[in-house]
View 1 (cartoon, helix red, strand yellow):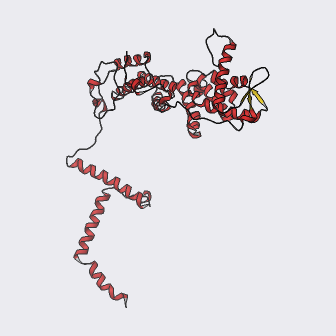
View 2: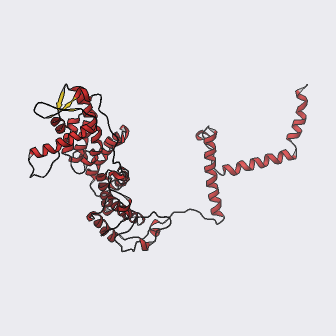
View 3: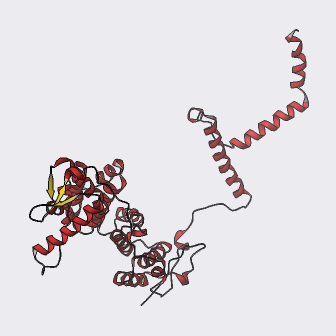
Length: 373
């Protein structure tokens, strides 16, 4: 069959009025999609999916212009000062509730009342969950009123310290991220102290070398000279080298709340140290030596003698070793000895028995909801 015989019929179909009308409609549809966007072929992505994304974005811009020309709503520059809430509530204590609508000025506390609320939380003897609820409420009132000053820094610092004390790392990280922004804006606060906390949190609990290197690179020269920051950097060196003797020496002399963040890593470091001792020493090691090296001896009131302090640390060490499968024996004079050979195959890391939210087994819902005087 001759293929050229089909050409006259195909040409006639292409020139038919219906086909011309169909082509005109198609070209108009593409003109609406591209709008008045200037041609820039060298920057247009070759990928079809990406090209569709750019087309949709440009169509949105054209539609927004069309809506403005026909009197529809158009997003313009918003005057945030005119929309800022000015609180009038005088209640010092207020429960935290998530906002589902625009805040009511009658339920928002002004700055002078928020200062009293912060002082009330700092002096309160109630549990952490109550304090956390009150501090979240204070933070919310500060946010809706766009208050960013030294009071804001104090609130976030107070909340971060309380979170560190009970091991609530999730809440601490939220506060730390806000503090980093506030410090960058030039608002005064305990920048050196929280730089040390940030380093310890990243190096001991994040296991992310990139975040650690980023945090260390942001430290200014004067920041690295601060006592708390120097301590955090020394802890990093001890952890990196596996020097458990140095780690627990730094643990005993930790400034501020550095020891609270180190507390969350102590169990792992002690287990690593005992495993190392069981492989390195033969046949036995005095438990008194292990108690001293692993930081079981704690500073007690000065009225107690050195023997009493050593006895307390020794008992804690014995309990910890037994809970981790260590084999202990007594020598000829009755001193406890750690049997390294037998323990090398019996040591294990047990699951925590009293694990609870925020690290405190005493925190229960009833305590959280109760507001006793």
